[in-house]
Structure formats: structure tokens, C-alpha cells
Image (cartoon, rainbow, N blue to C red; front, side):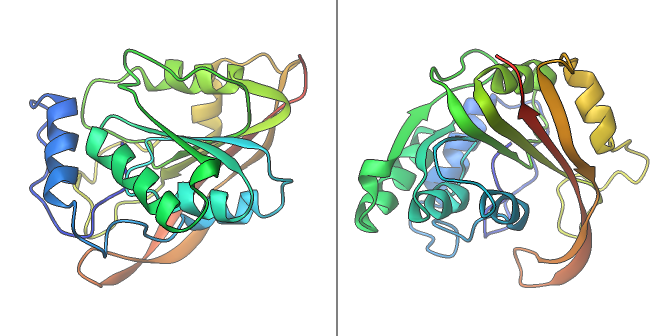
Length: 224
């Protein structure tokens, strides 16, 4: 659910407590400067660069690369994660960079709670988890939290990278239109602006590179 760390930790089995797993991972990585404040995800940068800055919600902010990029470009960002260490570190980095007033952090287990507020952009980057999570319900809440004209950007892994935790070649990866259909949003209120599968060269935790596919879904709230 959170962005992959710079190190290569043991893969989660799905049997652990999710909050404990992510907290232990980020606590172990607390002083790893290759992880914290990493670059923003390319699909988020591409989409947000075309928008007027407003209020943004970064779901499962992890190491905070997207949060920091958005704040650096004038967005007021609410960054949330299940790990208290993650949100504390992201806020510290924002303050050190001089735009702490643009960043608010909150700890949420999205299986149980969702942040309050209305947003112009909600970003869900690689919002995957081996743990139990009502993903479609969370993304519906995200869409409902948009102001009129606001956008929900969902970017999923569309292929299996060599460094991915899940190497199951038979696993079905939902296409962007399948993800959109699962949300069940009223087309009178929400419009799909983009549903495609761009390819790019990505760098893994050990510095290796591979061509990967991103599944990109961009939904705009057109009604009240």
C-alpha cells in the first residue's frame, strides 16, 4: 500500500498485522536517506503539473516523495499513512525543506478510517497491499471527497517488475477500466478523463532497471 522502500525487506505474507508490518518497516528505514523524500512518482508528476495547485490528499504517502513534490509546487497536502513513523518523517522533511505549512500529516488505517476534508486532487499511487483492505470502497470515498472539478488519480502496477514482492505470473491485474467499473461511480457526477497503460523504464531497489507498465485511471468530479 505504501511505496516500496529503498532496501529489499522480506516480503509480507499477509498474515502479519498490517499496521505493525508497515510501522516496523519504516522504523527500520528511518535513517535511510535513499528512501525518505524520494522522487515523486512520474504519473503523479505528469498529471499534477497540468493542474492549478489546490488541496491534495496523498493516500498511503509512504516515504513522501509525492507529498514533497506537490508541496514544492504549491499544493496544500494532507499526507496519510498507516505508519506513524512514515507520517512523522514526511512532516519533518517538509518542515526542513521550508514548506511545512503546506503539509498536514495524519495516521490512518484506511480499512477503518478516512481523513476529513474536500480536495482538488486525491492521489492513490500503487495502492496495493497483501493485507485485507476494502480498496474499492476506499477509492469511492476518495472520489466522494473531491470538490467539483477535482480529480482522483489512481496509478497501479500494470506489470510485474523483477523486484516486485508478488511474482505470481498468473495473477490477474485489473485494467484501468476494470478499476473504474469496480468503483461504481455515477457517470452523471464523475467522468473518466484517462484510462490507459503507459510504459516506462523504472529503477528497482538494487539499482536495476526494467520496462514496466503503469495502469492509469484519472477521474474528474463534474457534478456536485
